[in-house]
Amino acid sequence: MSLSIRNQIAGTVTAVTTGEAMATVKVRLEGGQDITAAITLDAVKDLGLAAGSSVKALVKATEVALATGPVEGLSIRNQIAGTVVDIAAGPAMASVKVDVNGGGLTAAITADAVEALGLAAGSSVVALIKSTEVSLQAA
Image 1 (cartoon, helix red, strand yellow):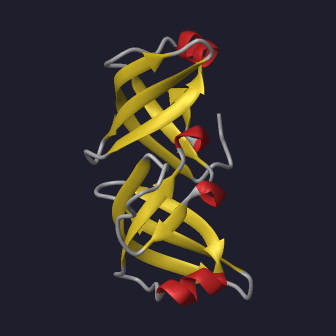
Image 2 (spheres, one colour):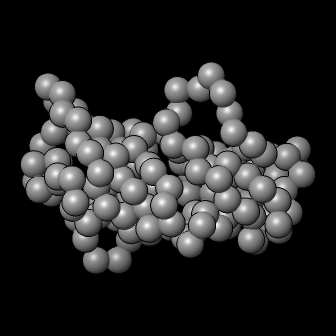
C-alpha cells in the first residue's frame, strides 16, 4: 500500500500499556530512538501488537515540529534529536529533512520558522511529535 505520509520509520514494539479505550505503545526505532504512539485499544487488538512486534511508525510531515534543542516542561512525549540534511523552502512553507540516526523525518514548517530558528543543512534539531499524532502499521 502506498501512502502520502512522508515519515514511515521501522521499529519494534517494546511495551503496550492499555486503558479502557486507548493504549500507549512504545516503539524502539531502528536507529535506537524511542517513540510513543497513543492509539485506540481496538487498533492494538486489530494489529496484534505486543512486545516484539515489528511496526512502522507513521507521522505526517505537518505534525512534526522542530526545536533547536531539547525542550523541558512540555507534554510532548516524542523528542528525537537529529541533523538537518535538506531544506526546500518557498515563500510560505518549507519542507525540512532531518537525519535521525539511521532514519529520516520530514517536517513541514513555515518559512518564517526556518528563518527564525536559523536552520540550514548541518543544523542540530529536535523533532517534536505528540504521541496522538503517531500511527502504527504492522510490518
